[in-house]
Image 1 (cartoon, one colour):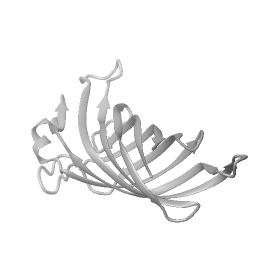
Image 2 (cartoon, rainbow, N blue to C red; image 1 turned 180 degrees about the vertical axis):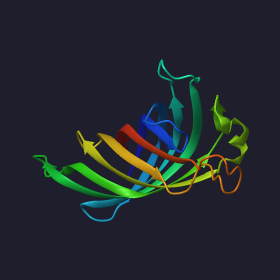
Image 3 (cartoon, one colour; image 1 turned 135 degrees about the vertical axis):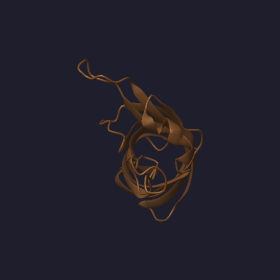
Image 4 (cartoon, one colour; image 1 turned 90 degrees about the horizontal axis):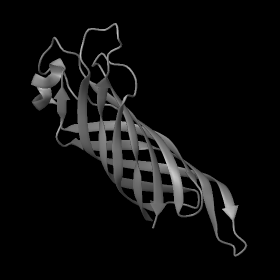
Length: 183
């Protein structure tokens, strides 16, 4: 059980004084997995995932737009539970809906920070991110589907206790929306 995944992230970083999922990014990669039973499976993905944060000031605010770009290699390990069985006349079948949950470990590639105090601290960003993940998938047929997933970091992107105590610690959150093809 393998596949290809293409999609988009909507990301934000808690602690950077910006609110909202305003940083869009590419999500692309491969999936491998195994069926545990008729309704359950486990998958592992290898994804390139662009995340970060972006703030655009309102007209009444006196600061510049700033961006934190954090591209990752993301490896989620997920348990899937499937339901809504569809059967064909020849006896073959597939499930239309899957709920998924698990953990994702990510490696930070080349972060960039523009127009914000963290520019001087980018080298102190943690390279490893661990997040919990939960989502749902809808299959149009046995090969093609769409997925929505929420991931929330357990480990900080930036830990102010280790470096500059006057700055906030940073934690990443993101939604990803993807289309997948099962090989």
